[in-house]
Image 1 (cartoon, rainbow, N blue to C red):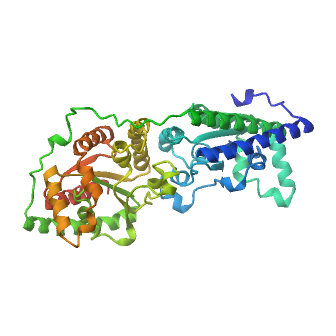
Image 2 (image 1 turned 30 degrees about the horizontal axis):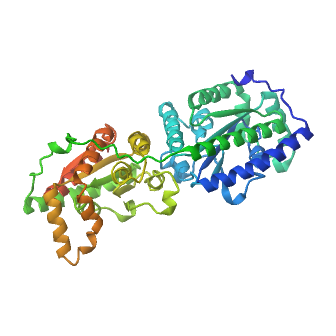
Image 3 (image 1 turned 90 degrees about the vertical axis):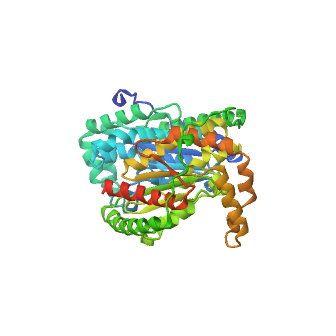
Length: 489
């Protein structure tokens, strides 16, 4: 495919200057409009060694306001990055609304250079494409404009550029041993590039292939494509209308939660005996997790006063504090609102050997955000797939993912609310919002039921915890975690 491109396309100097000036002025206006409308933009530059990625990035940004963009040069993974899912370092770099992120090489390194160097295993390659497409689709669905430019030059042109760089001491370092190896096996590497283009050219993140033998022609093609893409995104943004229908069904009969036996209980003597035994075992398992670099993600959801905090406290009291972190999830702040809703959770993904515990999670999108109208119907409906994809990413990199729904009935919740109000040490735990949410109990039952049905997977299952009895609930959580860790280790 690539070797059939017409590589004789050139642009004369005067024509180039005229077009670049006009396109530069247009791009500057479009950047300001994107900022005003809160449109985030990601621009990816991939291509062969010496194809001019750095040069073309400079050409593109020369007319832009430098306060509105950031350029990332992506090389091999650091030790810190190797201990997390490979997309973690890119999720943490996605731009806020109205800003532009430009990548000199990107997440495609996984299926190109790393694949060529046999760093990416065959098994990793099988799901890397799915993860990449899922990543781009999630961002695109959320309003991110994604432009991907692939710069192609012929083998002969690449040879000439390498030789020119090697002539001078100041530039010779830019030609690496890897560059020369890929040049030597040019056809083999091109086949990998063509496969990548075919598997990741999508409606939401299409590739623009740039014939880059002539640098002036390449610059104008990139700037023209960028301007057209931004104009289309701006028109789409202006035409959008927000829809906040919760999609709740009148007379809905729950299927998952209605089957839970909330009469399960445990006496204090048995609780203390099992608690001490399980905590001792968990402490030993934590050390082994660290030694084998196994990451663990524990997610807690449930009714207000359902016992999330009590279960988390019994879990962490026996763990080495250097090896875990608890992340309480509140309403998103202004910075978090300016990013994709999953961004703040990706930032807290644990590295290998560590445990991340989330007290409330990304499932807020399909519960409180859905019911309170904080997101559109399209947004919460597609969130089921986005969440499943994210959790699959975690599992693919080796994480244990367990999700607990702490389930109590409405009468037990009221009893706990009133107990909190009467105890000065616990009054801070109860708010007017907690009482207000009780009025929507039936709506939440339906939303939770649908969440459990859509997102309990073989790789990241939901564990429903019968929590009317605090003792029973805490032991069930501990036992589940211990069993999962033992099975993995």
